[in-house]
Length: 431
Image (tube, rainbow, N blue to C red; front, side):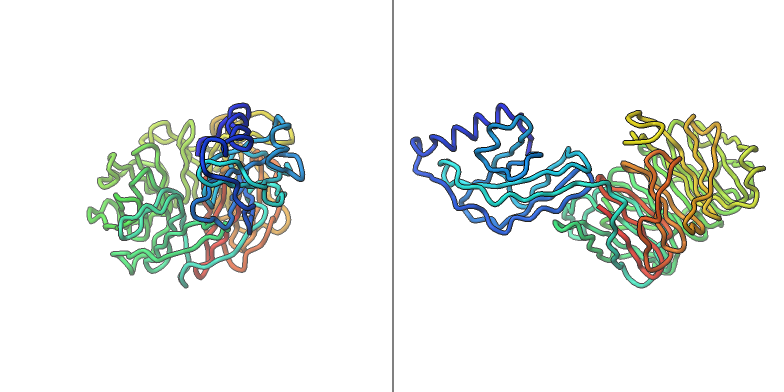
């Protein structure tokens, strides 16, 4: 539902509250019942018991004790018409207290009384986590995107996870912000898949023995790519538009055509395992023995010898890139574009100059081998002891925010949330 400006929406709502009954046979509806608000990162999901034939209005504001009439005197109040449960309010400010009320009408009549005001506070995802489970096999990889089920139904946005012995699942977030998992039929059930990515309708999973699994219909059905380009295990994959790059064992780097089905080997210049890849202003690949490579085209790679010599005993496992605007600290209110690489011994490397120079630190509070890192509104890293760490700029870290019951192997971010996966089908979700 398109959010209307306050001035326009109040004219419409006030007209209906005050005089619609003169123009039609409709009238006020009783105040909605069972109104619930589940808040997330800059969003809130509002649900209520809908009654057939009733048209609903939702009002929200930073004021407490909100009423439909009171909304008219507040310049910060917002509203929407013809709302249906569940309704997602977006564009909220994390850490700010809001309240919401709902009223209704029938047949275009005057609006009825508002439901009791419900207060809520949206907050940064990555702080509070809920554990779940997808099967019994270890999950090594996760990605976020639009998903279709096996009947061709569009399920909306969700996650796809893969792992040991062909484990393949999709997860959809429900109105209570819980993540519900369903198995996907895998045509290669004996293969372990270590990484996932997607671009639009195209999903790709890569794994042991150079295996590549492909879906062209939003993860609905999957097909193995039979053209073998490498016998080496593949550990990571990234997408840039319709261009895909995979990395793996013994310095393997593969690039695809636009379909993701035809792959070509590239020369990496190293025999070390390459465990992670991301794309920002440049490609960055990380691997064992402090290996860190950069490229502008995924074909010609340059090794960062300073990082390699300084961190020769560290295996770098994952790398992420994104634009962030830290709410506090040195870069408060300024949008920066960091790369963050993580690895063994709780090691974190950060670059804020396009991958040229890197600063290092070891996370305190018992960080073991950091296995995955991603970035939505902030960076979130996980380790193989189930710990989770967060950072708004890649430099100052807090945590562990919460500890899972087993090893966490990978993490991905959605529009407003994060999900990590790990040992024995473990999933960990935060809104």
